[in-house]
Figure 1 (cartoon, protein in one colour):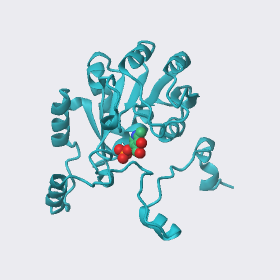
Figure 2 (figure 1 turned 45 degrees about the horizontal axis):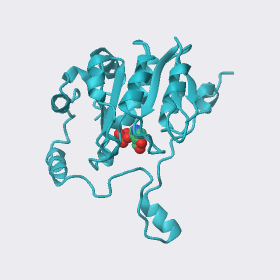
Figure 3 (figure 1 turned 180 degrees about the vertical axis):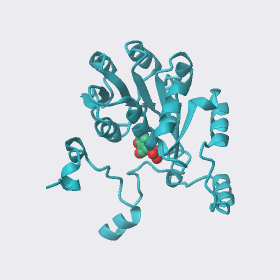
Amino acid sequence: MSKSIEELIPDYLRGLPVYVPGKPIEEVERELHIHAIKLASNENPLGPSPMAMEAARKVLADSNRYPDGGTLRLREKIAALHEVSPDEIFIGLGSSELIDVAARVLLGPGTIGLTSEGTYPPFSTAIRANGGALKRVAMRAFSYDLPEMAHAVTNATRIIYLANPNNPTGTAFGAAEFERFLSHVASGTLVVLDEAYIHYADRVDMPQSVELFRLRKNLLILRTFSKVYGMAGIRIGYGIGAAALVSAMNKLRTPFNV
Ligand SMILES: Cc1ncc(COP(=O)(O)O)c(C=O)c1O
């Protein structure tokens, strides 16, 4: 007898956790009979800019048409902002999509993805869901232990995920520490540097990630419109990465993803 669909689901998927987002505020208020201030997903309580709302209202009238599948105008604007090429910009369905698609490009049987304990759970999920072996290094004082992580890199390590500042611990590493770490990482290992909270960082020596990217093309910098820009519901994130990587990621994303 042939197997059921349930039996055909690979074992590595059975063991994966479902991402559990913070509960909608209405649900919390209804359950607990309180007035709640939601901090769980680090959304901006001030809402989007009136200019962003006006722009969104204008495009709604054209929503019978598919959007520009290559997001050219947005890529051009973001590229100009960071002084990189539009070919080095990937626009995603939130930066969440980039976390997954980067792993899909690089991981498979026999490869390793590296991250830390005490960091954003979707990093580990992306590694495991895309067939890589997950290696997690313990934190030190609620911070990434970058020297230990550098020791943990092997020839099979294809991707490393770091959030700076980190969610949930809120700690951040500085430029010197990060550059020392990068010097231990071979050019064939991609370092995904998730800067979702970069605008909130208060240390003065934060890594100048885009400047580092100009020198090292094995860096993929993630940014999002979800946090400081107050547009989590619009679902737009972007990455700055090598044109070859961006091109491969574009082959895997869904058409009209944004
Ligand atoms: C570190 C980190 N990266 C990425 C994301 C996902 O953000 P986006 O809304 O861009 O998918 C979050 C959201 O909480 C986050 O905390």
